[in-house]
Amino acid sequence: MSGLTNIYKDDVDFAALALQDADFAAVLKANGQLDFSNPESVQQLTKALLKRDFGFKLSLPPDRLCPPLGKWRFAGTDVDEKSLQFARENVKLNGMERRIKLLKTERSGPMIPLDGLGFENIDFTICNPPFYISTPQMIQSASQKLRQPFTACTGSESEMVTEGGEIAFVSRMITESLVLRDRVQWYTSMLGIFSSVSILIQKLKANGIENYAVTEFVQGKKTRRWGLAWSFEDLRPRMAVARGVGSVTKALLPFPSFCQKAVWSRAARRQAVQKDKDMNDDDDDDAALGFKIYVEENVEDEAGIRVTIRWLKGRDSVLFESFCGMLKRKLDELST
Image (cartoon, rainbow, N blue to C red; front, side, top):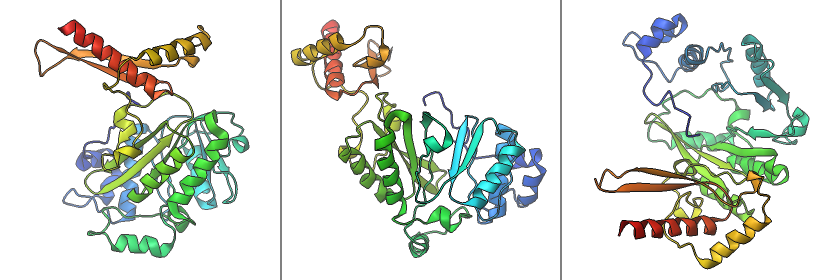
């Protein structure tokens, strides 16, 4: 994830985009601003950006959400036939039949139908679940906002409302993941209600899932969403990603991917030696601990350096913490 760049972190230059796309220019106001309360304008912005930045052509119904596309090999599922119909058209429109596979699912069926898709394994899931328990809750949530929504919402009821809301929806994903386990490298979902974050983290921990990440998505100054991801493998995400929500109590955040508190104790060393004996020396997948060490100039001290250890792989937080302490102690000895 460290190699990805958000090309939309800065505001879009609407005037420049209008010069490149006549359809977008048609919905741009005379003062160079875009009416985000108008669904047609919002959808046209999405179409123009996908066409300019990714070369995608897009056809959208006026009463459905308009997610952006990527350039990986994808499988898409939905219970809504109209959404799938437009998805099929867009796949064909862009010649992506060999890269995108679509499957209609049932509400009572699997949420991650790997067998139905004919897949043994996948790298990750992406989910934007229905946030609300009911239509009245959705209306009440909108009415409680201090300001009107910045962007028009074109979502249908099937995209916005589900029994039990997003907590029940993602809880079903967690339950399925306990069976699928490492057939999916990372399970991920967006969340629209902040209180859901802590509840779902507690569900992960209650099921013994300790390798997880929680982060926050902020679009401009108006929209805030949260992301939750979990894995049954032992590759550790960067701390800025895994612990990306400062407002969540620290007890619920995953173990930090670097630390400097403990020592490399004899007990920990014996444990590491025993694990090493049990390992196949030719199989890196069985490594007890994987890490990367960064050495850089300390800008706060001209005579010193800063050493940062990032946890990349492993399940034993005690082993990693004690290793960091040992290395810190050795560096302190060298500096005296």
